[in-house]
Length: 434
Ligand code: GLC
Image 1 (cartoon, helix red, strand yellow):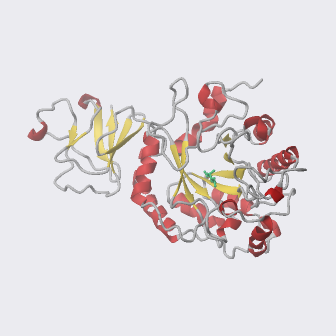
Image 2 (cartoon, helix red, strand yellow):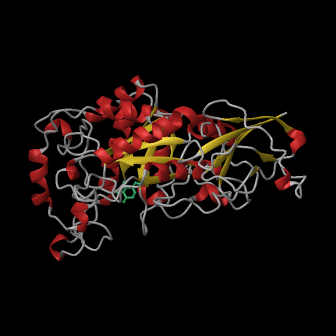
Image 3 (spheres, rainbow, N blue to C red):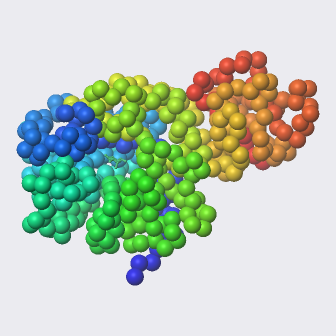
């Protein structure tokens, strides 16, 4: 009988809820067709036709250290890379398959290189592992909801032994939990239809993972997918409950609470364009200023944001992502205290921005200026010790203007004559309480 240990749980989650901001990396064979990581499924490509990318895989100059450095410079505190995605191709030297990067012309174990590079940058390291595997013969083909051969009756599921597949999957998870040092985060993906929980032999799997990596935190997708919270939200957690909820390509309107109304830990996973894996023609990249505001939104609702990069087959981060990461990094260099270790402020969202909080430090994120002095709703004047521009430490004086004399109970700050705020994306005021 599984007993949820709240104290142990809160302890292992500490770094994650302080970190608030991570990098996701989706990279693998699918970067060659360059039409996203689901290309084998969406285009119903046969294994034979997909194998040409395997023969060709020789990522010249790919250097995971470049990714790790970009993450640190952007202010990200952890990095999660796909060790194996749904296509079944392993970026690690698995003894259970030949479909791995160490068997390609480059002969490299990219997971080994990745974990070393991320640790060298002083960041937490995570691995994404797909529960689906479109390469393995024992995984359901015909009639499965996602398999590339789902519509081809020639790929019936006779003689496919799913339990044999699960043993393969568990063995590979044992490999990544054994051969690559201390892992901080495991990102399983994803459950669907009847394939969830015990259908993955979840209890056995998590027992093994926790024995090998006792401090690792695990997402909720052994039970659900980007939709659904998982059993931790029900107050009756299963042995394979996730440690955090994983809203995908959206930010929960009010954060996430369990059945008892307690805040849950969650991480919104977000792409910079519309694809996780490299996509040569998807140029619809979100502006950096928007991504900064989405990170603030996640934290203001008690959550994390993990932001994805999809390098090309040579390991190059798309130029649009490089530029956005640099702009986000500049903002974080000046304002990360309003992100790291912060959460909901317990104050209503202001009209012109958002609020985050870390104890006695309340951060007002101003996205546009007010007409006249700026009201800081929800703060009692007598509680205030100081108000500063977070980026510069300069004092933001309390306003004594006649223009708001009708509202004596509301705290207004005087940001001076310039109607344009110092930071066009997000100017942060730090209110320090007594
Ligand atoms: C979804 C996508 C998968 C991606 C994951 C990242 O599960 O299907 O391709 O890796 O989201 O969150």
